[in-house]
Image (tube, rainbow, N blue to C red; front, side):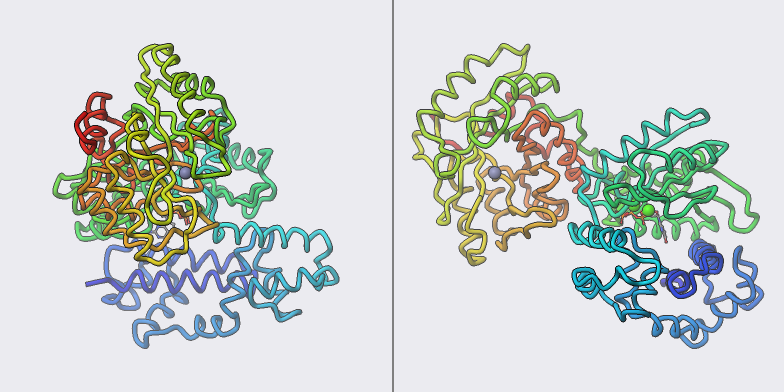
Length: 576
Ligand code: DGT
Ligand code: CA
Ligand code: CA
Ligand code: ZN
């Protein structure tokens, strides 16, 4: 049965958030926040504790214990209810806008009655803010900019942008004297497709130099909150970065905690509790004596709970804990397993790098094979012709063998027409080493039409990969509405691979789709869809997505040796 602790902790955390808006009382808010965490991590169910038992929980004094007792008796806490009615939910949304803190949000509500992001945008547009006390034309501009940033991806940013910033910060902090370890944690370490904020961890005895350094980085626009354990800053692009400095002996516990996900951590903590242990960001402890058992590495913590170390992309409470307990965690595909790229463009169509540049950059990545797949004639804007395609093939054949052992494949990215037909007749398609086929227009056809369209493409004996299958653009365009279960089934039946397009704005298929598709026994191709030499490294985000979907090397055709890949490509074609 679920414990009352999580509900109580959530209520106290909510109260802490409300307090920081209404009263700007950071101390009181912090006290509630600490109590919430202590209760969430407490070994016994608070529902079974008396007044003294509640007060014995660390960070829970008489006042908070009384409120917990009030909840356990009546199912609500009066002051929390009051605070809720005093602050419309829209105002709480305002607090999330970069550049607008709790105090200013409350002032906007009280002075102008603004209680939604839309209302605020309207007021900014009509310049109603600049005459308020403490505001001005500059603040107004900042707020407009903040709203735009927030709306771009529902307040979240693409994994690639977050990774750039995080890697720079980790490099800077790692160079500081006294840095024992430094890495990024949170959703970025789990390789989610979008990131809410960046969580950086440092292991060091003295936190001061790191807290000072993060405030002085060129990317830092403002310090949101500073302290000895945690400092939060906002970057010039409106992204929040949380830096936490841990003692080196607690590195594993902190890394485990701040990597999340929250859902995974809740389950892990329950496992600890059932063993009369207590897990926090400081370590794994005996619940009763408080004696520390392990804290230095993640592996030790998982092992002490009879679990193998669980790779971060799996930590979403999607069955990884049960699989770990059975000793059945997948051996995940890694960046190093990728032997080639099967979807790339050149300046012959809409790429910006030449064939020679792309091939040289691919060779520098150590690939064993590399496919050039420019667009085909039906995407009229690209001005492709059969003659140009054949001339490119000659250049590809001439270049093949000039970069060590890397082999070149001549391919194309076909356009799947609204009726599911493709650019060239079969005898032309047969001349390609590999054909990717993708949808590039008519996204709003009916579900039936879209489903038939994709299935017909799978049924072509020359289509080996369905490119960016849903066509979504993160934060810009939703995916098409097809019956993807039927499409996955058709891919499995026809021996057609599904692409994991690694462009950070696409990541298509996404992790949940892949999890579903793999149940049909489909194979996948993790491609960069590069339009420039600088896009080839995007593959890492496709690999991260594949890891989140539990894929192994065997599931991914471009990890295979060329011989096995060629057999896969040939299997659906008529015998020559
Ligand atoms: P994000 O930033 O929205 O992309 O997602 P995360 O997962 O990075 O979330 P964040 O930054 O709020 O917190 C980082 C990790 O810290 C999170 O994955 C798990 C841990 N954590 C934070 N707050 C809580 C909490 O209230 N309970 C538990 N169990 N874990 C938490
Ligand atoms: Ca985060
Ligand atoms: Ca965070
Ligand atoms: Zn495409």
